[in-house]
Length: 571
Image 1 (cartoon, one colour):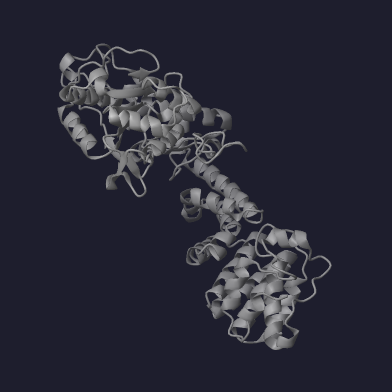
Image 2: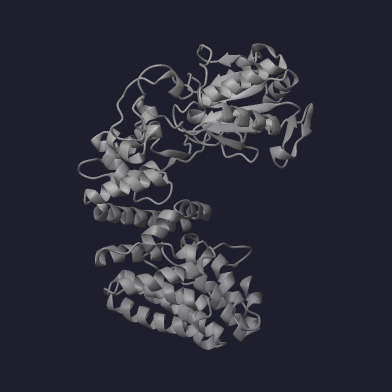
């Protein structure tokens, strides 16, 4: 039974005896198997041959499986309906009923070539594995999964679905030799028909298809098979250490010879040629009426990865073309934009957006911070990235990492700039949080002088805040109150980086409470301290007059003053 276009029976398979036996054994032990491999390697043919062989041995009619061909005009919202039709059920049959129907008849579910609708296929598989009616718990299906007895699901795709119950069976290209003994991976291999004994599974008689050629050749030969523009984009993408989206690819690979839009469009061609791997399937996201069980792909844009072998070949080509320096500079500039975006998101209504962005791009941000700079301008860009990620170092548990990056970058970027003044302040503030008082004092002294030279009152106010924190650590509330009041009353011109006045207001209240508990009330805010400034710094209010920025709690807990924690929630 199959949904989609009618197809002839799969051809015989040569050279896959071990894979057929291994896959059949795996299907007997686990309810969900995903057969993965590059394009045209024969995933579908292998899966269908194994299922049909098992059905013949068991005496099951109709091939023993129900199949949906996901590239056969099936969209994301129609996968479940197509599978219902293939099973002979009404199109709107619930997944629970479908699972019981297949299990009772010994039918295996085959979701074939599901890459275009991987998100919807993952949703459907989860629903089938959650069925409890007529089912039995199976430990191999994962925690909380109840599978109808006998239900088996087989998925074929280039990438796994990423489910906990999933067992991945990787299909590798066959070692093919030409009649004269020349290996297929040799760049000079002629395009001649296969001999029947050399035929990879899934391919009939005829010349070697281009997509299969790119999938199994050595990456060096595959690079030569691409168009000049695609080859150039591939080479430039080789500087990216992690997975990436179309925006970052356009920033890194876009130039006067290839626009950012053309670079992003090239990703599809490289993906179809199996040069790129698809890490995350993108989608338009959920609408207001959609529920958590709606079969939609990820609301985020798709992400890709350049495998290690392909990346090494692309990097060699990039260096041979003399473009490595320019591409690395473009990469670091793009990372500076990512860090600035995360910094702005941190000051927005939902800080999880900033955390998610910084975590998703962590490999790229780390590389941009650690790669040796090419010149003073490049070093300044790296320092700017470190300053923009202040929230990641100070509030997300990565203080040691932030201090290490700043110490190294401050040595590399010695030009007297406003960015360097901010970096000195951030390094001093992090040192103060780590109780490294002498280091903090030295860094804050240098930051204050640099900020004064560059007429940067925002950094001067933040230096005052850090000095107030150090005074609290020394049990000197009078000095702390002077510095903290100066910071709390400042009107920030750049509200995106660093803690704002609400943060200083809380610590000032803690200081005043420690000096005179009977006057333990938050100081009257200055005329410029309003709700907008509190929102910009992430402060929240609980009750009447309570101002509680999250990072202020950590600083106040480290204070040796009595009553410090008592002053965190003042009415």
